[in-house]
Image (cartoon, rainbow, N blue to C red; front, side):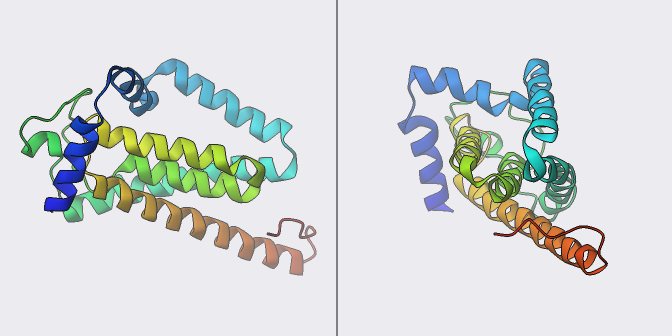
Length: 190
């Protein structure tokens, strides 16, 4: 816990600067901005319509991936662990967004973005650097703005990667079952 607290203060205060103070509150709250939600919807629709078979599969799999990761984490895991947010229990937190009333461990932002990054990177490997970079920025932003400990986002990333991996494994099993029945040919392999 001491290491986690020290890393939190290093990220939240030791790295503090005007640029991070401007960009990370914006990034961390993208899910609360109507324009960002519209942009995500447009990008999802373009992925579905313009990026070939792999893009369509990725777009469709994002729906159950995010639903599973968000509900598993926000409605189940957080209530088992019940860890308070650092902004509720530590002094001198440089808080840049609302602290929120929910629990801290694991970070839902990290879980959701990492599970989406795994699915997208599997089907669109050329862009995996962008997917993982975005997920890492969002995860770091949660610590920088003062609402999560580093272990919250690290655990969230591991859980997100696991959920994304399970979604891919289930998809491949269903695809193989479907192919054995002659319903469509297997073309998605890594």
